[in-house]
Amino acid sequence: MIMDPLDVWRNPEEALSPPPVRTACFLSLPAELLNQVVSHIKCTRLLHRLSSVCTTLRYVLNADEARVVWNASELTLRSETTEDDGVQPVEKKESTLVNMMKILRRAPIGARIFLVGNITLPELTLCAPIYLSTRDQVDITRLVLAGDGVMQGTIEGLHFNNWDADSVRVQSGSWRMLRCYLASLYPRRAALATSPIVMMHGSHLSLHECHVQHCKHAVHVLEPADLQMISCLFQDLNAGVRSVCGGGDIRVEGCTFYDTKRAFHFDPHVRGYARSNTMQCEPFGDVEPPEHFHFIPQL
Image 1: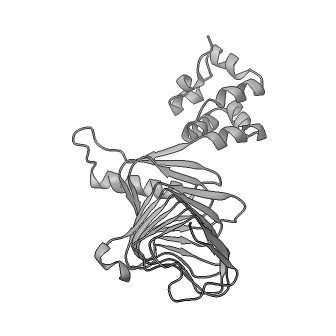
Image 2: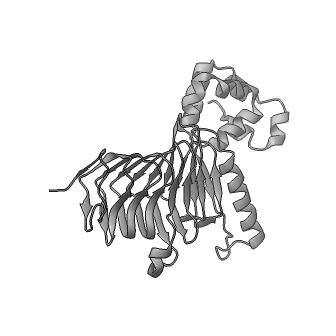
Image 3: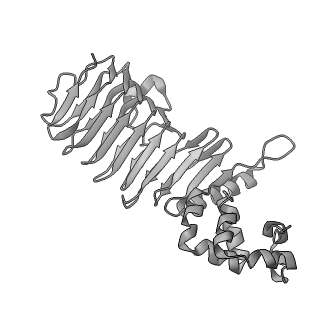
């Protein structure tokens, strides 16, 4: 029976001593077999730990063949609680949040990160396209998305609440928001709340199954950008999408507009289409639709 190297080097001090004979036999296996073994490890943190304590595994994990292993791995960040009452000390909670923010800011391209626990994060900037998801309720005060546009990043299941500032600013790159919830802090004053999502020049954003309510606009396209919205719910808004600064490419499909004054507020240069949408409001209000924007009403 071959000894698992994780049992041998669970503590860093043990890595300094010569490995047992069985572990040495395991590490002497061909690189192809070692790569198959590490492919069953789905924890990014554990892969980094193995790479740091073992020269052989470092060689295997740094090879091009191990790129599939890294892409399939996940990093779980959890809000730790005490065993007594489930409430952690203030100092420990702040330290946990600081570490989370550092990891998220420095996450490499394509990293898969899951947030576990009821967490409220302050303003966060993601400089690389990653997959960020949650298995609990995670609130983020403000999220700035940036990237080179070569790869698409994904934000899934996060909650955003705003009032006098945007919650998500798509600065650059290509991003997808999946099943996110965005709303104003004061629902009764929705007309005064700023737009939760703001898009800058050249950015790309795709909204899938998102819920936006109690805001001025769901998305405000400040400069020409690429926006796609699929199967989203918009409720209690002045307008679903606002783009009055030079056009852009906007595609809306399968969305529901409820208790909203009008679905779109566009300038004449906007391109794109809207089809298969359920609207309990006027699509463009008293404004003429753009010439190159094709609106197909639901039958």
